[in-house]
Length: 158
Image 1: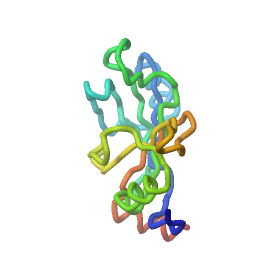
Image 2 (image 1 turned 90 degrees about the horizontal axis):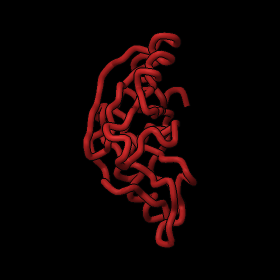
Image 3 (image 1 turned 135 degrees about the horizontal axis):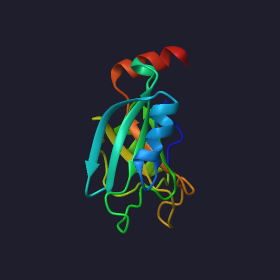
Image 4 (image 1 turned 45 degrees about the vertical axis):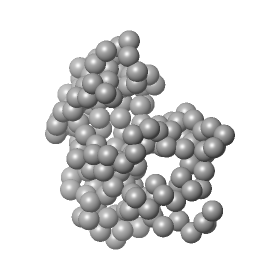
């Protein structure tokens, strides 16, 4: 177990909010708060129909994903809990996954893959187990590979 962390968390990449109807979420986030819809994503495997919204610009943009389940009876239930997950920009995702797993952090199934916004992602499991006791303690956490311009911009700030 190594104590020297070979990666950095640079900032918040996204928050994902779930409800039975993303239209109600859009009323608040788009109509009232002024976020713009920048894309959509649907996945039967992940049981999600989402609108990808944005606040801020360039490397300082934060996604706000408004999600509803495709089928309310199936898992994952993206609307339960309403704050579905928090996404964190990571400067070196493969090193982060390797180091965190070696240090007892539990990952959700699926490994590193392309996410809805086109970045490589993976998820920390919300609950630990005997083999991997460290988890999000009830919160699903998405690790997102930051592109070079985000790494540069957020490194200059920090």
